[in-house]
Length: 123
Image (tube, rainbow, N blue to C red; front, side, top):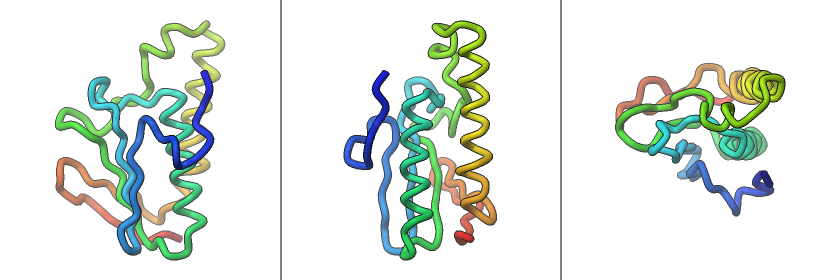
């Protein structure tokens, strides 16, 4: 699988900036926004852009559709992997969240079904 190279070719997320706020929307509603390798790569690119843009002071992460924010790992993708590769991919996804997502925010800003739960400033 060839992973995304830039913000110009996003396939699984929608990334927008409005004023000092970045909006990241997981856009895989048919699979409850499950995180596959491509989605994780695109989230990494968006979060790095947010972190490197001094004009952005907050971010909202949401999921498209009305059934789920995010289902977690894409089990269909993992099921086509060897057990060793599935463990590696799962750990890589967890590592991504710990290294790139959690440190980016003082608190995580989530927007679920048009209801803002918590929006916070960047570190």
